[in-house]
Each structure stands twice: as C-alpha cells, then as structure tokens.
Length: 325
Image (cartoon, rainbow, N blue to C red):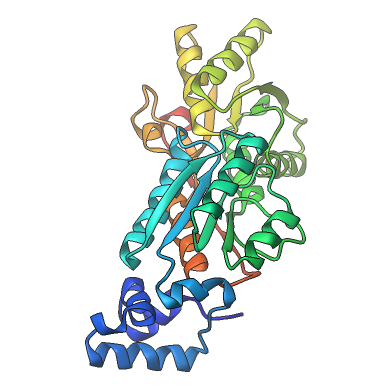
C-alpha cells in the first residue's frame, strides 16, 4: 500500500499543508524543512499517480465535493473536514449536493468536470464504475465517501456500520430492552442496510426476536415524528428504538414526549451519527458517533495524493446520554 501524505507529514514532523507546499510550491518552504520532507518522501516511497498531475504542475488548484444532502448535519461535517484539509493545503473547493437524485448527481459531476477540478470527493447515489473510469482517465482523482462502487478502482473512506449497528443493539439489550423497533428509510442506502444488519445479528445472537421495522421516506426529524406516531397508533410501544440517524431519533423522542411517553423509562431511543443537536436535544440523545470530519479529511488527502484503490474504514463509537441510559 502506498504511503499517504499524512504519513509523510508525520515522518517529517510537519503539517499536511507543508508537505503539499513542498510538492507544489517548494519556493515557499524553508530549505531545511524542504529537505526533511523530501527525505521522508523518499524513505516512505511516497508517489502520486497521473490523477494528480495537474496538482503537481500547479495548474489545478480546485477540488469538487459532492455530497448527498448538505442540509443534513452529517454531510455538513464531512464537508467541513474536507474544507479544513483543502484550506491547509492551499486549495479551493466547489460544493455540490445531489439531494439523493442520480440525475442531479450526473449534472453536478458534469459541471465539476467542466470546471476543471483536479479531484472529486463524492458520496455517490448513482455514479457507476464507467463514469468514474472516465473521470479518472481525464486525470481527475475520485474518492468515495461512505460508499463503494464495485469495479471503479477508486479509493474510498467509510465507517464500519455493521459494528455501529451492533453497538446500538447490544446497548439496548444490556439495558434490559427486549421488544425493539428500527426506524429507517425506504429505500435504504448501503450504510443503513449495514447498520440494520449489524443490529439484527446482535439481537439474533442474544436470542431476541427480529425488531419491528418502520420505514419512512426521509432521514429527517419530521419523518421521525411520523414514525413515532405510527408506533403509538399500534397501541403497544416497543421498549427500545434504533433510529437510522440522529435527525430521525430526535423526531421520535420529541413526538413520544409530546404523547406523554417517558424517555428512557418507558422507551429507550438510540440514534446514529452524533451530530451537534444530539447532545443538546430536549432529551440528550444516546447515539453511535461517526468520525465525520475525519471522513472528509482523509478523503481529501487521498484525492490530493491521487492514491487509487485504497479503502479506509474507520470505527464508530457508542455515546451514552439520557435517551438510553
């Protein structure tokens, strides 16, 4: 596996931005620092492929970041992580959002390519291996965030969502909750399917019945409120609820509280992502934390170095607050 720009920075004892300057604007770096960075590059065997040619020549200083929903705090944090890494390296960024539409995604990709971006960081919703291959053939480094596209050969960075689902389910069962429900969205994205699979696997191992599944049409607080109302309409509430993301979980909690349900005494609720509002909700939310800014930062480093075929998987973390404690 090729060394990353971050590993070079660590070996040389400098920032990623300094390594980028040595590669692209060496005249701006003190000679002693430049020598140290170049020695680290040689020692680690750091190389960049043809996708980074424009960056080496200094003719391409812009990357494109295409996320699914910039209104979702999860994607905002991923984008902020990418922006911080780009700013550190002296690069500009063009933002686009697909709104979960493959057609809009296609238009965004075409636009970014027309703008001459040197790299594309994308959470794909319909992007296929053929289109990614054309981008790479045109010298555009492509890095996938939280998704993989079989046969594309692009690098990717994501989270172990099966593990995240396991953490959430095992936490609820450890609290003595046995009658569980899952609040999700239809159609589910691969990460959501993986979370549910991890939860189901943990419940099966513990001898629990499969959870009731409530599917909504959006990953929003309004959808969470709708799911909670549907659960209350059933007459008998589950004693534990796993939600596909924090926005849905906040909506679920708010609607249950409005309906007179005590959280967590009667129903424990677990979200996913650990967005900022999770900690400040009316009932602070127990959730599974994703290292969102790290996702954006690592994706940016992969794009800047032009590394291909590297798959980085980060670990989630359970954060216990009042909604399930």
